[in-house]
Image (tube, rainbow, N blue to C red; front, side, top):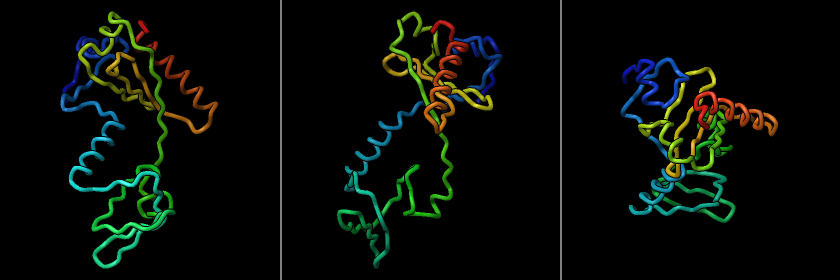
Length: 176
């Protein structure tokens, strides 16, 4: 990682809203759905069988096998992976206690005109800041500017957060 002074930060971000930055060239971008699809495809290629829309109601070990029970029946396998993300429920209470829900929301523009697109994150980076309520932003493959931040659990709170993200986007990138 290296620190960037104001000029270098402007060069990387395409914005003068920050007095400096830190860059980690090892970083990258991840599309969560495409990542999950890639993992599923790789698992299937080596013999895994995936059962979507099959909420697991119970898991137990019988001999050397794992037996999962769903509303539609049981499945026996040599190995059972717990891949629950935020939806562990009561199936694994110890695992559930290790999770802390954090809401995040994003907004995106329509695809930007080329001249505006080239002025925002001109080197193709994704960025986040270190404010108490951080922002993260990037351009997608279609040239939309996407910005995200803390979410809320109520509909009016989400609407307030959307408005706050729009304001923040215009502060960082007035050309939007």
